[in-house]
Image 1 (spheres, one colour):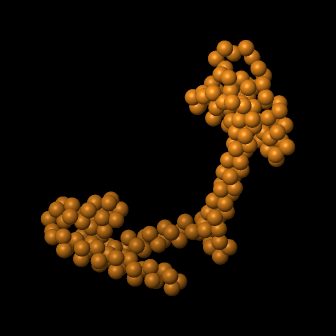
Image 2 (cartoon, one colour):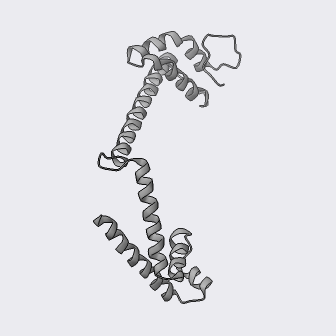
Image 3 (cartoon, one colour):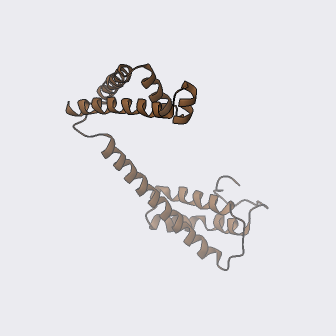
Length: 178
């Protein structure tokens, strides 16, 4: 049915509850404004409209009371969503940025330097160690499959991965010390 109609029109497709909602629109707006919806009262009614037109109609004993209760529930759901969104954003902000951290550009430069250092550390272990690590950790290929591809035993693949992990652990310890 789309957007909530602003005024009642002689729409033959408008169901009983939808018709009551259109008729009670001014009262619902005042009701929502009195409960703190403010400028969002229209948006709450639009959300209520979308919920009602998407649900199969069933007989309701007191449709006006039902609509007022449903409007209050929609407003409550919107507030909960807003609080959750604000909490998520605050949590993300606290985790992602701290006053001690370098600026974004500087962090990107540091990350590139550390990636180059990790590439060099893996290269020092030999081409097969580097290739096994990349296939397993980056490409997600199983150790058995890598062993088959390279024509070596599973044990050799495991040892190559251990060499790579040790080299990267040493590098991480160096980074942590800086």
